[in-house]
Image (cartoon, rainbow, N blue to C red):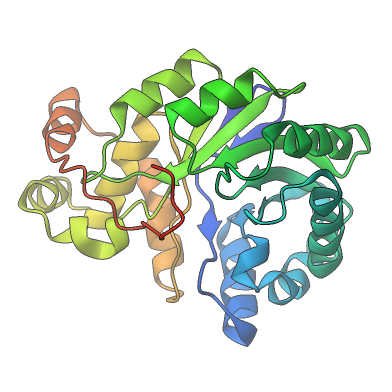
Length: 268
């Protein structure tokens, strides 16, 4: 599995399994099957309410060979709440540390200083190897970078051909922040695009593989979610293709600034 080195010094697999909306025994089965297929990067969050279902799937494997990401919910960003929720997350997952711990959404009502001071303590205590954020704009990142005592290694955001956030990607690259794309397939909408379909047909690949490869070639981590076992090896095959500069440019032009995830509290 190809990896990217984070600014913390640790490496993250470039393709992982997203687990949003995976619940119960089905969640356990999908995560277990994913690891058996070769996935080592599993992405979850406290708010997903599935960490206890992920636990038995990852317990069967050597911890150091897995990369586990979780996220801290937006109303639990005070110093004491961060420490408490991390302990709860570790307990639910049945592990001693997280490879990556993210602020799930920004919250202007809780001082960032409290949150990042707590994250720094978690890193010092060995409960978290790397920290980061999710759904942060450039404005949020500028503020966070001026506060955090340790590297902000990651920004996990919605990113797909119809939401090609080039300015955000450039800012993150300039500041040693890696991007992870959630909803990398636009929840399926980009898979029907004529440009992507034409490239997929020409390369004898699936539209999903083409869309994922476009992100990977930009240096973006991808965490596609699936509830179908056959999609697990299919998504992995995105690592085995290469898009030409012209094909990358063609997909770049598809941007519509079309955001799918837009909860009422979002600060975009």
